[in-house]
Image 1: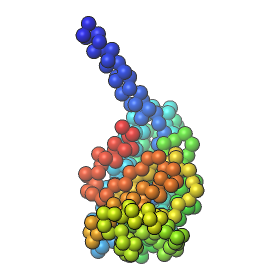
Image 2: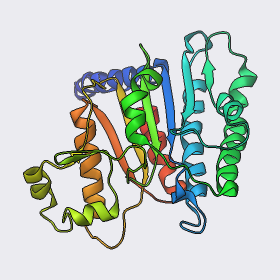
Image 3: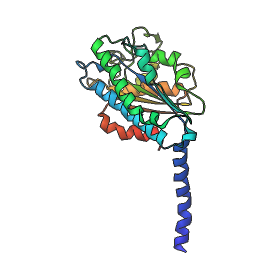
Image 4: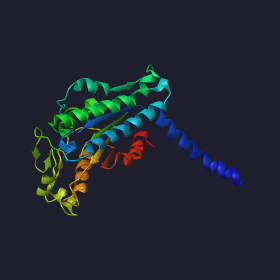
Length: 281
């Protein structure tokens, strides 16, 4: 009797696990990277940050490949691509960007799947190496990318859309510096200091002064976002909290249902975290 009762209790659990696994294996992934190629990756400023970025890209790419390998060929409808704003002034950037635009369908050759790792490792490394060698950092206009491109580039029907933003968490570009009462299109260490967001009551100050990013009347409910590499200034003990609050409020205002705000760490430490997020487990 006890064994039968135990079996009956285990059935819903087993079915639940099976359904979850099946859903993860049949969902169609559409992963986009938005790379911040500002001077945050300059070796003189942050010696190993560009290597961390490459490690993060590798981790997401590996999770994507594992997902594709776990699906039946006839169910393939997955893609991955990389975006910049503005476009970096480096040799053959259009060609390099095209190589990072990967798409799989039932007609895809298995060799193409096996070749992703090599392509993403080599091409992404070239982009960072060229940018650093050129030593002319055009910055990253994340705010404008959301304003003009995120809906068209990063969201597709019947797919699980994930946008991975590699950035230090600060937002600034000389061509997108706007203020609308308490809202702004940017946030920098100096800006945070000027708004006196340097104590434990930063939330109250933000609410009172209606501080935050200028949002758009978009419904991004079908987009998941990972902000990866947040690197707050050490001068303010609440800097990280303020940065994450700005991003969280911004995404919430645009109806993003699921997002992750991840502080910079060694890529080896974050690899299992990213694998878990991408796999949806």
